[in-house]
Length: 307
Length: 216
Picture 1 (cartoon, rainbow over the protein chains, first blue to last red):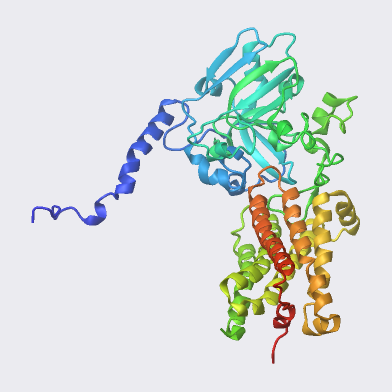
Picture 2: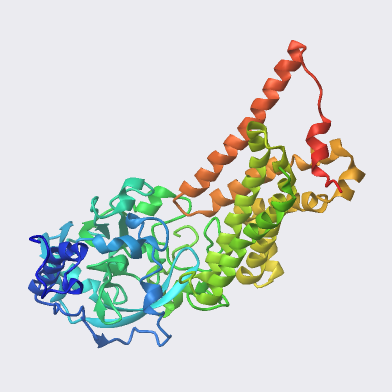
């Protein structure tokens, strides 16, 4: 009976092969996170983060909805696709290059970016252009503290945000639904506004992949698609950048895309929204309820034309 | 094959999509936006039943299973059933019976205009689906009226197409299926005309209409 295992090892104690094979993956992942020096390997805690006066007092949407109902077309165009496929996204090593019309272009590692400014908790409303909304307790820091690193030149008027393309981890890239890499943009004053943040976490923990790990833009007075996920490149420009959605449907998506109940999407109304978890729809607020803070950015502009 | 015993299981099976969504709402398995999931799901099933109904005739012709046609009315009515539910979710859960907003929506949004048109075209078909109406109208006129289902199906696919934001894969699949189902009918027309011209045409119009009435 040479082939029989020693009697002192119960079959139940033998690691199944599938799990055994994943051991290496687990070790790589956990050491990767541990070596990054910021996140303890055992848990992905980042927060709680400094409370912010910009936070809303509205009840945050449950975590399972924030992480289970996403638009992240690189992982597929169904809302459930990102939660299902984004676990493969490689978020380390990660760096962001900041370039274009700046005095000194820079490439910053994610570890350095996380040390730039103290993390704050920003509980923001998020309004999707499709007519639904959430309340999300982001963990992040003002975008301005990242942009100031490179000293923009005087002729820099816009900031372009370019997001990651990982063909092997992103099944949606092959589908050509949109032009990759997904690109978004802001006017420089919008980007420097204190409400604009780079989020690196939510609910006090490291940002889940499907929400745009390891860092994403959050611009709460604009439709959600303006807030690019998994950002790798930031470029200062003099001319208004062409964004992915403007290329996909120029009649439907403008550069500004401020939340505006009076300017409908050509195909559906923007007057009301369904807050995830609620039964009745609620009225959509001008600038998503942030009019007091941002309306002056657009004074004198015809928001019907500059939609 | 006698379709009498087939009808109850097909009837039950046709209710399964509805059961799935009712259970899903109860058990909270429809994700973060259950109302949208139900609205879209019921619309998808309305379209599914439309296409299934349109598949009956080609399937019958190619398989020789004449009894299939006995299921057609029921399947067509299930298409109408799911359309009504789909419309109800829109009127109720999306607009909360705000008739002004609904009227504006119908006029302003092409995909809703198209969807509503399809509904109003489908309505007379559902109303004349019974034997009495068939007898009253007469086979020829009845058939003429019910040919509008081809237009309805095209409108339904267009409604789907104009609704999606960017990824038109699924409506495209429906469009291809519908194109095939309508294409095969055009092909028959052409073949029939050729036969007519060749002089070998043997008229058999009653065959298409009579099997619809239930024999008692």
